Image (cartoon, rainbow, N blue to C red; front, side, top):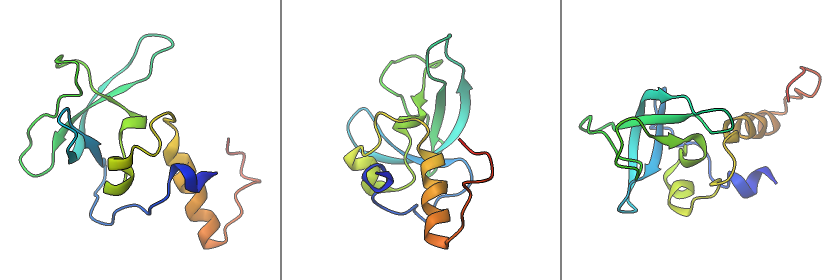
Length: 114
């Protein structure tokens, strides 16, 4: 089931706090997290992002500088971003960790992880 959400590996060009997002025109943008906008109770946390190449803020479609992208809108490779493979699940980074551990033959089932 993890491969359905994460069919392609992490892009090696990504640095710390870097992701890919689809901008409002549907183009894949390489971005860096710059802001955290905690949601109200029951709402997802949103993240403000800027394009890595020139530092330009990427609008999430709300036209509001205090709104951003939810984690399920951030991707660690271009193909999955373009195809919106995990557009419903914000904890996909945990799935990526499990996927890597499985590939490396590491069993973390007894480490108390969710």
